[in-house]
Length: 616
View 1 (tube, rainbow, N blue to C red):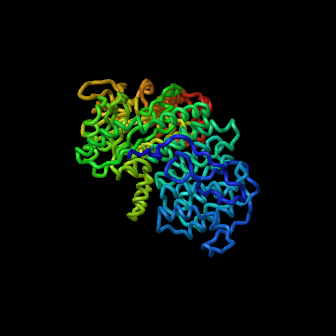
View 2 (cartoon, rainbow, N blue to C red):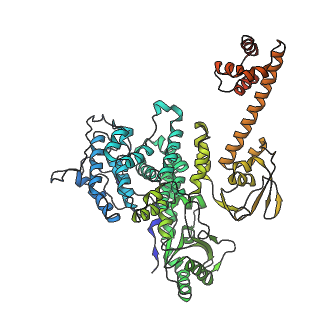
């Protein structure tokens, strides 16, 4: 029987906060309608915090559980979920982490009036539901202690070890009073750098943001939409890049609900109405596919896969009247077999139903940047409606849903967690992000990060067969810089699929691109008109700025040479003796070229500079 897969279902959870002192343990999982497979949390909204308890005595060992001990009942749901996903987890350490976090946050409240500890407990529950390891859960319980309590990172490191301290430090915001307007940008830069060392930092941050989105209704109305917008621009793309689609879908829908509640409600009504007819609408196509799979000797589960609300909204906008089941859902084939069986299953689908030309995408042979692997096709149903079919093996499915989390779980089982959580080489987007972020000033970093994360994906090829991932709309110039910054700086043209093309030509997925270079070539201002990728634009701007600085230094030096010559002084000799550098350092410039540039720009007076050289 065809099943309706809830992992990609629509709607948002509607769960009340656990009242302070209520019967249910704070953060305990409750059923949620049509949500992802990890347990949803009780909502614990953000809000002002009560005066903090200055007493901080983290325990070195978990104390024995007594009948009257409030810790174990409160954390029991977390222990149960973690025990199910990780039978060998350290429950004593989780108990200790919870007790320390509860003690430090005692007296702090969320805006709903719930104790603040409900938030870190909920974040830990989200992570436990995805099967994350004990260390990650302990870090989640403690993730706000350094930021919001007197507890220091050094104390945390002494109490819980270096690994937990690295994770907590990675998600801790920078102090706005010290960093000012740069705080947000530098906090995200800090998260990116921490993720390069341990990707669990990003997984904790995403779970933290998910719970905050679940409790967004407790924030003032005027703050909800901006918070949701920032989440969709900066956090949801990270979930997609890490392949954690179970997080991405829910975050997308929650942000959509906050930004456009009426459109969200209308989309929900249309999708629910369409899904009520899904079984009957897909039944003829499913029957044909099952018969074809049997004929081809392939075993596979067939599921109706609902699209999440934001995806439907992005596709159809407000044009939802008469939304059909094939527009609100797809078919998912989970093949019981190897990669080659997926291709056989795809052939069976095309034998059963007429395929739409040009709509096959092979993400098995060429996985996405986020490690996603599946075959996608579009076919025509017996009733004449086009719909999408996704084919993947059972082994590919966990990665398709949980991305890097699935790899971390597998690595934990193989005792190779360190390799999985480090900056993986197969996450090319992270390598590209790390490559340009160090050159971006705070003012430009967030804009660059948004642009980099928002870009779509295609893959072009160098003549040697090397695949070069690029965003949609990228040009041959972007391709050149993706190969190597030096190649980009010296490029003068391109050969695309054997034909000469300008550097401004857009690259299509599958194109073979050869970059033509000139040793004397250099970037020009008009390159910024068609460079799309952040790394390319960064390198071009830096090269242009360097050239302008060199030209200004040369102009300033010529001006100074003429002025000193009138006083029978030789600047070349002064430079050889080191006198010019001494004058530059005395004026606060690290290099003489900076001093000459300042002279050309008018920031340094000629008469004053000549007087200094005259006194030497």
